[in-house]
Length: 251
Image 1 (cartoon, rainbow, N blue to C red):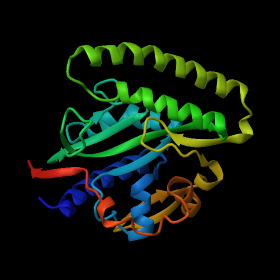
Image 2: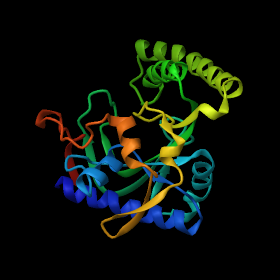
Image 3: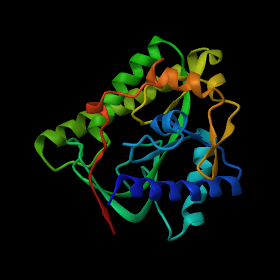
Image 4: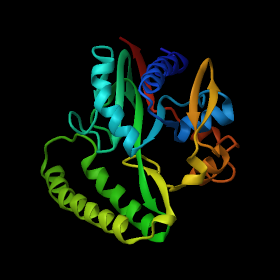
């Protein structure tokens, strides 16, 4: 199947998520490449094959609590309680398409169509946070994906688990001791490592995506500059326009 058909299936899941959020007074915003697609292309990035949204911690927890009953048998909700997802990342999964992932670091290559939801938490804006984020993301590489049983993977897990606990303690100390007026937002357990200014995110505002009203950051230009750099409106070289999917199958 074509990438555009897969994008349409993702968009239909987003449509239901938006309805759920509107029905339950839950706020979210378009995140990462999804926001970039809307601003730069007025739709998906042509070679993108997923949707990313963020919620602050309060709204994320509320969505997690109601989503199972709200969507019932329509979608599967995957989070750290029932999958290998890291804490702070959730997938709303449909079953209309299966994407065969081309990325080598994945053990499980098949994914049904989904929308990623990230929990954005407070982080101190400074060099200490940047160092912490880079190191903690390395640890997540050991723990975030299912792996074949082997001595190397078992050792990685045994090292990664205590390291993960250590980083939780460091994060708690940072939250407790560092000044609150210097905090920004970062999606937990996501590929993104840029801490966003809260003034660039809030108050959220509406934008039109196809026939759907979606929430985006208050200053999308500042948000995208922080994430991708000042030249985010320029298209990357053709050899960098990579689709995650090696193949897309209709179920």
